[in-house]
Length: 110
Image (cartoon, rainbow, N blue to C red):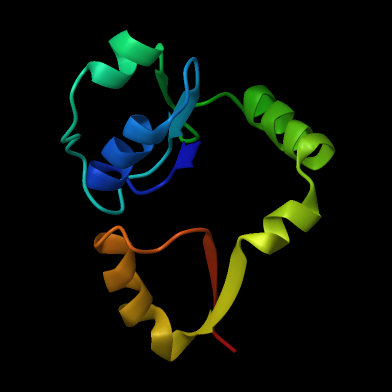
């Protein structure tokens, strides 16, 4: 699981992760708090990994982009992506903050 939202959404992701799974946290759109328990960690061996793209060395970032280019199936990304118009951004931001938005939203500003 990759979580770019944080807060309750990250807590939900941890609670729903399978045994031995990993959750990568890379954003705080909903907040920096983590309203969770240690249960996912001690009962199912879940790992919470922080993703730092700001201070990561250039070589490490280039390696990550190479892995994405090689390993990410664009067809699968398409299945979780939907496009919205700019005038729908506030509505979708509210859904995101409520934890009701799933997948990837592309805002068309044209």
